[in-house]
Length: 409
Picture 1 (cartoon, rainbow, N blue to C red):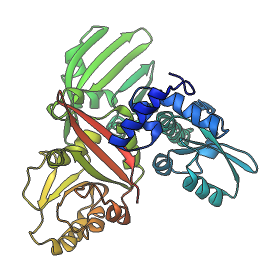
Picture 2 (cartoon, helix red, strand yellow):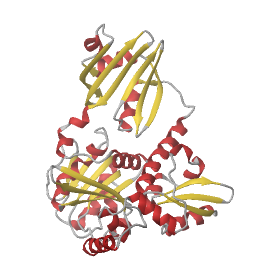
Picture 3 (cartoon, rainbow, N blue to C red):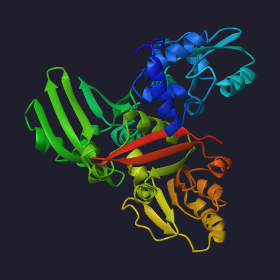
Picture 4 (spheres, rainbow, N blue to C red):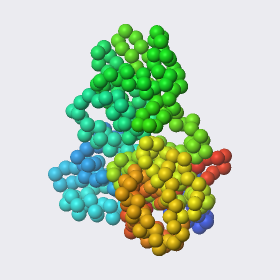
């Protein structure tokens, strides 16, 4: 139903929903299937006399987008898309985004003009624009790489597909980094390394065939990953395509992962240097079960993780587990002592009402997931430097509903 054609009955239905569930009237219209998200945003843009835009990543001004970090853009759902000598055009989800707009105006000393787009479109744009920015930084960097070092790059990107291409004497490796294809020339005896690290080896699985498919295991840095391998060969060269077998792992059968969008955003934040998340769940008891497994679900197993608790809860097999003392007053100093080990990821399950330990927990690793029971009070978490809330709800049929939102003070 189009905005402007809502009947009095529709209004009554939406108001009844709003009284029961809270939120904004527009959200109630969408929940009752009376308007679509796009129709609502278009209506808001018309009322505010603002353009409602549908930009693609290639049309966005790179210089403008780089005025803000990907974390800031995601937190505010606000992205600069065009910059002139005295004006900055910014895409937002709502004309009420005054705080973020005022911050940009003060920081850049430019006139800020707004354009509206659906929140889902803005999130997708942010992922694409900053992936393109990362690719631009690598432009011109074409130094050859050993295949073993290339595997490390693949792991760092948590790539869901990667491959090797050979044309004549030239061989290159490529991988999918959150939608952006990275490519590097290969050096050294990459064929010998592949024979040793992949089992069954190409020699055993391919033989003299021009096409082959097999399930194998890829060993790298002490970690073994199941992979689906595909091989093609013709007179011009050959191709290897690898898909990690993570989709069929028991862990992901037990905890169905979030959408690719949320996965990409968490990985982007993790690679930015410091990513801090409060984790909430419905029911609350489910969070204790899920928390230790978050590093493997979102990142690669080679990221060193530590699971911290005070009640001897079951840990993930992939994570180092550390139990704190029973005295919450000692937690901060105990957590401080763990900093020297320089873990990549920390998951923290401390359910005491005090949150004095939160700042110390964040210093244990550059990526932190803190289970948070006080869902009505995120103030202490925000003061400790946490800016994101990862929420997981169990649904019928063994499904999980994941959401990632910027944490509000």
